[in-house]
Image (cartoon, rainbow, N blue to C red; front, side, top):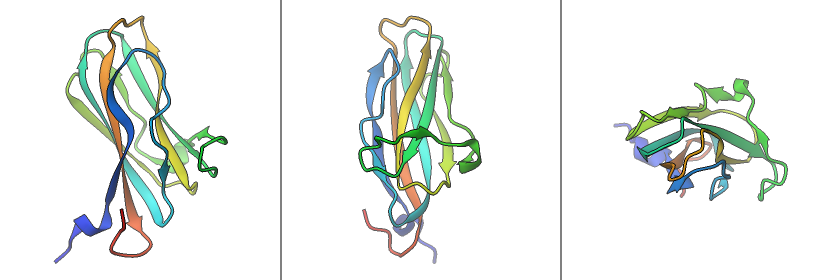
Length: 135
């Protein structure tokens, strides 16, 4: 019997919070021991603002001082955009790049929101080099 539970480790990269402007994620995720990740970005209530665009950053430094946007070739799917009408939804994409550290950022907000939208992001580390995966 296959047990996916022992192959995946979730970590929060962007705490659930109301956002009105571009912002770096709250936590840097260390992918040491993993070959990829599934990234889930969830929207709660979006009260104003036209479009919220998210971006995955990667780097080799633990503080991501060398952070760069992930190349499209290292993504499975695409980084999400949320329109004001996409309350209570989730968008997912994958990372298969070679960098050790990643972080989910809110790249841009279109419009001039005063209360913004509620968002959060979880990185699910997967494809462990050794099993069971360790959190």
